[in-house]
Image 1 (cartoon, one colour):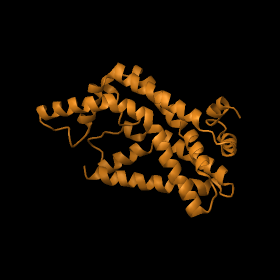
Image 2 (cartoon, helix red, strand yellow):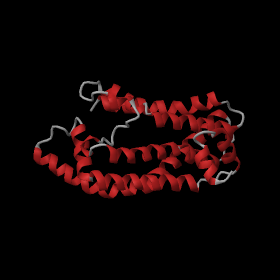
Image 3 (cartoon, one colour):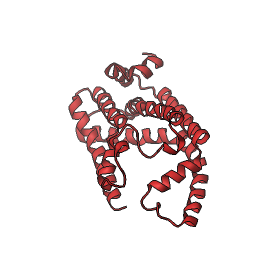
Length: 232
């Protein structure tokens, strides 16, 4: 398969795409697409909403900083704006590749070490890069929302495709709000794609076993975030 067929096919025929990726583990195209869309999202936020507005909303939505005295709050907003104006671009350039590297490393080690698979790291990295294209699609939809919603109503912290977006943050228990935020449609989609990809690469593992193996570290992360949120 050529790269355009892979890039589009991963959304509607992932089994076929991942079989090809496992045989020819090329990863540059999905990484570049993810970076470009990430940069476009950062540009949309910086030009249409502004980093000061974004940081002001972030501080207002954080229980630990929402009640800061006015002077401290403004200092925090000024500092956060400076950091975000640089960090946003750095994150768009390096965040995706770094996340792909970490996820691929953890899952390749998990499948080989605990499940007896024989997945090469380059295979795991390419599979992860293609599976995370759903996050690039998520970013593309966020770009649309940036221009469709009033700037003051855009909340970059909460996915509009998770139950948390439709819950009252102040009235919902913190642990439950964190859990709801983790149940994002695109995150679950990515987990399913990862399971398809690694089950194809491992050959002897079923999709259900691969999905279970991938879900366990994700669930550990979700529980850790719920615990942390409950103490804030």
